[in-house]
Image (cartoon, rainbow over the protein chains, first blue to last red):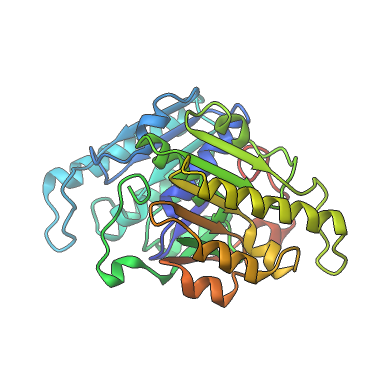
Length: 168
Length: 168
């Protein structure tokens, strides 16, 4: 089980790069987006054309406010976690990506305990990849590999907004 | 211009994820592998099928020894840099990835000055992505966005080797 966390860029894109490699090796991949919903990320058009890749999107286009989490946002995150569990247990996938699951847990859309028990129930031959800043220490402790993306310098600091095709 | 550096996982895979997003937005991408040569990375089978993606591989399957760099390794890196420059100037690409260029410069296969002058010659509308540990400070200073991948925990530390389809 791998974790990509930290405040820098490259958590989701690293997972996507791993997906690309996995597909290149003939592995079967399921990606569950916890909090991005129908946000028009460019990769989804490409993923949709790849063999052996399924993806499921939960959450809403509007960004979630951690100080005012709505019930429907919690419901979306719970459904995402159940979808990830079903994919993991189905025997249909070699790799399951839980995108932004760390944030969903940090913001209490789902319980960290539920994430921990999913990890513990993982069949040995399935690889899990968890992304999102704020990974809980219990998740880090269970992981085989943890990478923190550290922002050294970011154009948002200078007021530059994200660019279609590069950042989203 | 973006840089992914550091000793953690996710530098090349982040670049690949960005490529996937860029292609999803209809952008044209060129990837130049500086030091991986004919290493059988799984992503290349997938990249080869993507529209609007070209990639060029330099270097050798055998890993380069920084204390004993061979002339043919330098020649490969110089050709890679020239290929990246040609791609950048051609008007045919929106994004040019220089994979492992930071390592090639740190190990003196190519001069940092040559990398710096390539960056300075970049047409405004082209995005460059430079990966590899040991990014030179002059490269960092020129970058818009720099992310350091920090290894928090890695299975190699416990003697576990890389797994086909997940790590390579």
